[in-house]
Amino acid sequence: MGRCGASRHAVTRPPNVTRETGDGARGRRLVDLPAPTGTSGGPDAAPVRLAVLIPCFNEDTTVADVVAEFRGALPRADVYVFDNASCDRTVSQATRAGAQVVHEPRRGKGHVLQSMFQTVDADVYVLVDGDGTYPAAAVRSLIEPIVRGRADMVIGSRLHPAAVSEFDVVNRWGNRLFVLLSRVLFRISVTDLLSGYRAFTRAVVQHARLTSGGFQVDAEFTIKTIRGRFRVIEVPVNLRRRPPGSHSKIRRFRDGLAIVQAMLTLRRLDHQGRDSE
Image 1 (cartoon, helix red, strand yellow):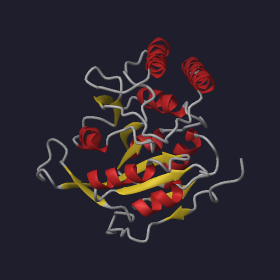
Image 2 (cartoon, helix red, strand yellow):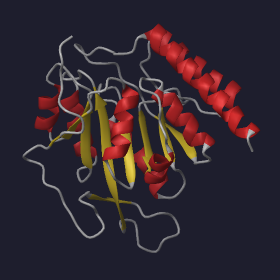
Image 3 (spheres, one colour):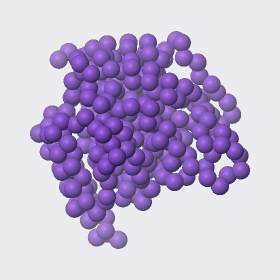
Image 4 (cartoon, one colour):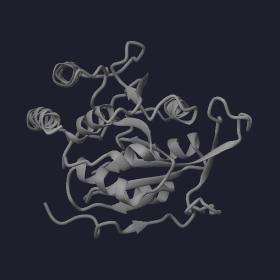
């Protein structure tokens, strides 16, 4: 495969997107959401700086629709597409749809998340895959518990009892296996360890020290956040099938083994940390 993409952290901004700035906003847009419970400012008195982060590798079939849906659901949020050296039209489609594109040449979702957290500053972040399988209509159900002070991370669970998700059988049972393993190894209780749709605070980003380079980063992020004593809750989201022409980048055996290895490494480090106390 030839070299694709651009230099690291180069940013492509769409010409039709304006950025609102103000004192203390650091150039980020302010999004009006309900005030945290117990405040006296009224239902729309707590604007927060919100960033939507979309990791992409060869998603030109779906990325424009994903950007458009989230710009429609959160019209005053900053929407970023982090392109992982795509070889198709992902960058041009994302830019045309109104996203700011940041280039991360190191292949792997984990490298992309590390780049996101080093590059973007916001009060609340929404992380969503660029494959068009997660509904933008559910985004406020992820954000609201954080803004109201009830959670530090909200996971959009595809396996929640109230969710109706279009999983194939192998992926469904694979995800359930990882959930079971997380309970055995870490005594944590979630229904979806690997969700690609979640919201979280700046404090979570500052605490996260992600080391995984690939898809195992979702498990690492969830486990480290929960073990860091942050408040993590789940809300149901209905996973959609990929549209025609869109293909998963997950290699089931190789990436599944990497997830298990990452979890075992985290467990070993957890034990070492306890022994040193």
